[in-house]
Length: 615
Image (cartoon, rainbow, N blue to C red; front, side, top):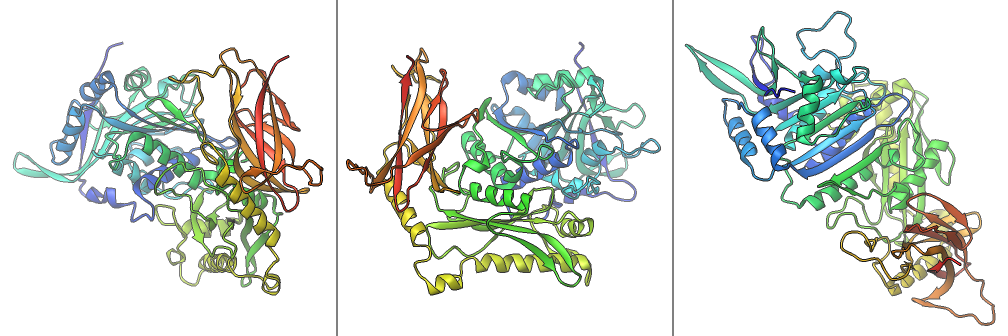
């Protein structure tokens, strides 16, 4: 196949003007930092591009381009640079950099960027305009049902994450076939002037690299085999087998001075904190996000929100909100007009040690005393912080899901700023029902969040109302201080991977306390252990038992007067396979296993585990 280079097109001001430099200011002033804003905006765009009835695959990659990929970038795509500075300077710097860091945000199983490629040449009765809305127009409204809002504003976060304000877009639209694949490069810089004869011609600062139209020189994306070839040379994901969707490469990614591994961890934490409802184990199929994060080609483990504090409490509240029943589920309504505005669900639980994904400056609060706000699309808009509970060993988390009634959902959607990170009633028409709906909901939710920290009448009359729970929390805390190992929630590296040799015999690590759950039979303590097989994978059975413990030591009871803890089940975190009782067959498997132990009344427990060889 003959290699062809891309051509630059610099956008001039039209006779009626253009948006110019202000394009990069359209995002407004988000309440989040740059990385969180980028992840939120990009993933919300993916949600809007989802195919109805199925959740998308989302892959976020951080890597340095290889020397060959860098040569492709410099020689085939950015061979021509703009005339205006500082755009020319920053692109020249990017092109000549020895190690170029990029972030790629890729989605699969989505509709891709289809439709016409020119905003001025649209066939009659055109319905799909995703390409021109994303690459050409700014601020076009999305018509996606319960979508995130304005299509054009969120993409600004992609450009501002690049130190040269430049992205490469590779897309395979739904229903187009391999020949419909499109690739184009875009830069959003400062406006400038260029002397052309006796006229100073003004340019907006937006530039595209693609295939020039023979009539007017405006570039369209390269397509088909050429697009696939360039994408492969850049290391972008393949889209064989009709894997529709879009890959966006952010060039010269602004790391903010942080190492690439830390950035990867922050991406994982941002995904979990902002999109946990759609990453839960039981998230509806049509909404589920299947996420993957890679750093230099290696995948980072992403836990289920159900398994990590404090998201496990939010997940339980979300399950209750979806069902409409639970420990504390309340309708939020307005009286005039009489209207159901949404559902608030709250869950309380023992404050358990955090598994730190990022240190310092983790997004996860400790303790948690927040309500997550969202529309029916189940994307977290923001968190309302409330009062902590009187007993500092107990925390709470709440979820509010707005009603899916058209007029109510539209009211909350229209109250969101361009960054979709708040509900602002003042954005809505004065004296409208929509403004009243949002005002009433926010007032009631803030009141509920503040009231959580106030003692109830029962508590006021009986200061020992929560004594058993507090005593249990205190005992568990003292046990954790005496446990040897990596600490609760942290995962050891698996021997046998990388440079670590496998052990001489199959082993199980000291179980770490993860969290406390409630059941019909009382409290259940959940511990985790890592099984490591020997080179012959001779470990056949994982055996676990619970023990009554006091202040970090096992309590011996030769007379049998104390009710002993019972191991209810053991579950493989990787496969999800679970077996009742204190033993589970391994069949040579290793990995992390959760041990659920029933906690006897007024006792604290610990767990032990060992791997038994085959007979």
